Length: 200
Ligand code: ATP
Image (cartoon, rainbow, N blue to C red; front, side, top):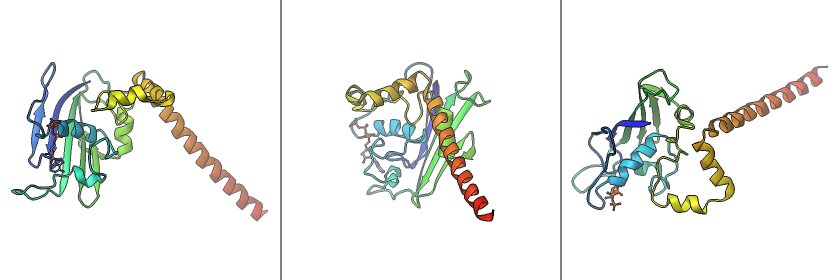
């Protein structure tokens, strides 16, 4: 899957609207220490649905991803990231040649996700990206320390990584969802039986 553009506003060290377009081939980001290079990969991770503040290198609150202000500049009220990917190969199950995923988070705690401009749930983003390798649990963003984590992972955790890579994760997710719905239906059935017993 090829990334086409990343638009950021109010995210971490980027108060102003910044648009980075990725050309063909490899893109490198260079800059002095602390200039925000890793914040860019955090932005990609975040817009794809990351909910763990640890993975986002934040101090523990999601609010910390919002530009917190400097001596010269006030804090922002929200963080917004949009990521556009080339979908000409239809790797994402959407009838569109280009897919833009967006996420916005306000200091009030309100958050919003969108796919091609349509507001959606985090679940929709998660399901769209399952088995593509770029989702929340994907393997395509290798953060600092991730290699060591993979090497040290227990059998079951390592298996999850391989399952995502070979496209099984989607089916495991669907199976779990179906089992959850089945359990809820079973509960409703039992409640109905109780009511019927009382009426008889
Ligand atoms: P290195 O090369 O040392 O790894 P880097 O270029 O990857 O550095 P980042 O870690 O991306 O740099 O950026 C760190 C900078 O981002 C710090 O100056 C930090 O103050 C700033 N920063 C992080 N979160 C926020 C925030 N919410 N508001 C304002 N600035 C922030």
